[in-house]
Image (cartoon, rainbow, N blue to C red; front, side, top):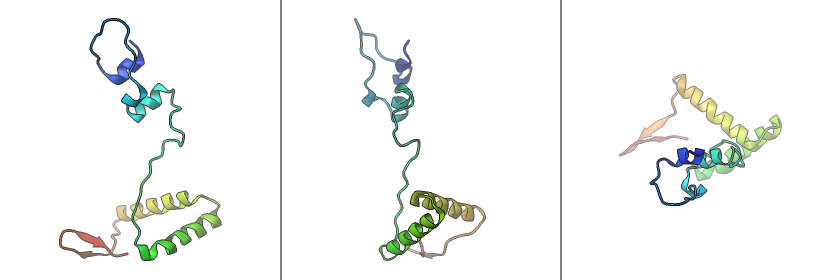
Amino acid sequence: MDFLDDLAGPQKKKRGLSAPPSISQLSSDEANQAAGGKQRKHGRKKQLNTRIPAGRFEQIMERIKEHSDALGITQNDVQFWALMRGLEALDAGERPRTRERKTSRVLIP
Protein backbone atom coordinates (compact mmCIF):
# COMPACT_ATOMS: atom_id res chain seq x y z
CA MET A 1 0.00 0.00 0.00
CA ASP A 2 1.30 3.42 -0.96
CA PHE A 3 1.50 6.25 1.61
CA LEU A 4 -0.88 8.30 -0.59
CA ASP A 5 -3.48 5.55 -0.07
CA ASP A 6 -3.12 6.07 3.69
CA LEU A 7 -3.65 9.81 3.27
CA ALA A 8 -6.70 9.52 1.04
CA GLY A 9 -8.39 6.83 3.12
CA PRO A 10 -10.00 3.63 1.86
CA GLN A 11 -10.82 3.49 -1.84
CA LYS A 12 -13.09 1.18 -3.76
CA LYS A 13 -11.29 -1.51 -5.74
CA LYS A 14 -11.34 -0.92 -9.48
CA ARG A 15 -10.23 -3.10 -12.31
CA GLY A 16 -6.89 -2.22 -13.76
CA LEU A 17 -4.60 0.54 -12.60
CA SER A 18 -5.94 3.53 -10.74
CA ALA A 19 -4.26 6.86 -10.32
CA PRO A 20 -3.43 8.13 -6.83
CA PRO A 21 -5.58 11.02 -5.56
CA SER A 22 -4.68 14.36 -7.06
CA ILE A 23 -3.07 16.97 -4.84
CA SER A 24 -6.29 19.03 -5.01
CA GLN A 25 -8.16 16.20 -3.24
CA LEU A 26 -5.80 16.28 -0.27
CA SER A 27 -5.79 18.70 2.63
CA SER A 28 -2.91 21.18 2.77
CA ASP A 29 -1.14 19.11 5.45
CA GLU A 30 -1.55 15.92 3.41
CA ALA A 31 -0.31 17.65 0.26
CA ASN A 32 2.66 19.02 2.22
CA GLN A 33 3.52 15.54 3.45
CA ALA A 34 3.11 14.07 -0.05
CA ALA A 35 5.47 16.72 -1.45
CA GLY A 36 8.13 15.82 1.07
CA GLY A 37 7.38 18.74 3.38
CA LYS A 38 8.26 21.38 0.78
CA GLN A 39 4.79 22.43 -0.35
CA ARG A 40 4.47 25.53 1.83
CA LYS A 41 6.66 28.39 0.72
CA HIS A 42 6.18 30.64 3.74
CA GLY A 43 6.81 28.22 6.57
CA ARG A 44 4.22 27.04 9.03
CA LYS A 45 2.64 30.35 9.93
CA LYS A 46 -1.01 31.27 9.75
CA GLN A 47 -2.40 34.74 9.39
CA LEU A 48 -4.56 36.49 11.98
CA ASN A 49 -6.47 39.58 10.94
CA THR A 50 -7.81 42.14 13.38
CA ARG A 51 -9.95 45.22 13.08
CA ILE A 52 -8.57 48.58 14.20
CA PRO A 53 -10.85 51.63 14.53
CA ALA A 54 -10.40 53.82 11.45
CA GLY A 55 -9.50 56.89 13.51
CA ARG A 56 -6.60 55.09 15.21
CA PHE A 57 -5.24 52.94 12.38
CA GLU A 58 -2.58 55.39 11.14
CA GLN A 59 -1.39 56.16 14.67
CA ILE A 60 -1.10 52.47 15.61
CA MET A 61 0.69 51.53 12.39
CA GLU A 62 3.13 54.42 12.81
CA ARG A 63 3.94 53.28 16.36
CA ILE A 64 4.49 49.70 15.13
CA LYS A 65 6.82 50.99 12.38
CA GLU A 66 8.77 53.16 14.86
CA HIS A 67 9.28 50.23 17.23
CA SER A 68 10.26 47.83 14.45
CA ASP A 69 12.82 50.32 13.09
CA ALA A 70 14.25 51.01 16.57
CA LEU A 71 14.51 47.30 17.42
CA GLY A 72 15.66 46.16 13.99
CA ILE A 73 12.87 43.59 13.68
CA THR A 74 9.92 43.27 11.31
CA GLN A 75 6.58 44.95 11.86
CA ASN A 76 5.03 41.47 11.96
CA ASP A 77 7.35 40.57 14.85
CA VAL A 78 6.27 43.71 16.75
CA GLN A 79 2.61 42.88 16.12
CA PHE A 80 3.10 39.29 17.31
CA TRP A 81 4.97 40.45 20.42
CA ALA A 82 2.19 42.94 21.23
CA LEU A 83 -0.44 40.23 20.79
CA MET A 84 1.43 37.86 23.09
CA ARG A 85 1.91 40.57 25.75
CA GLY A 86 -1.81 41.31 25.59
CA LEU A 87 -2.63 37.63 26.12
CA GLU A 88 -0.18 37.48 29.03
CA ALA A 89 -1.97 40.47 30.61
CA LEU A 90 -5.33 38.70 30.22
CA ASP A 91 -3.87 35.54 31.75
CA ALA A 92 -2.61 37.63 34.67
CA GLY A 93 -6.14 38.91 35.33
CA GLU A 94 -6.02 42.30 33.58
CA ARG A 95 -9.19 43.10 31.68
CA PRO A 96 -9.90 45.70 28.97
CA ARG A 97 -12.40 48.46 29.64
CA THR A 98 -15.78 47.61 28.13
CA ARG A 99 -19.28 49.03 27.95
CA GLU A 100 -22.56 47.20 27.66
CA ARG A 101 -24.33 46.82 24.34
CA LYS A 102 -27.70 45.20 23.70
CA THR A 103 -26.28 41.88 22.48
CA SER A 104 -22.69 41.86 23.75
CA ARG A 105 -19.91 43.81 25.40
CA VAL A 106 -17.87 46.29 23.36
CA LEU A 107 -14.17 47.04 23.86
CA ILE A 108 -13.40 50.68 24.63
CA PRO A 109 -10.20 51.49 22.71
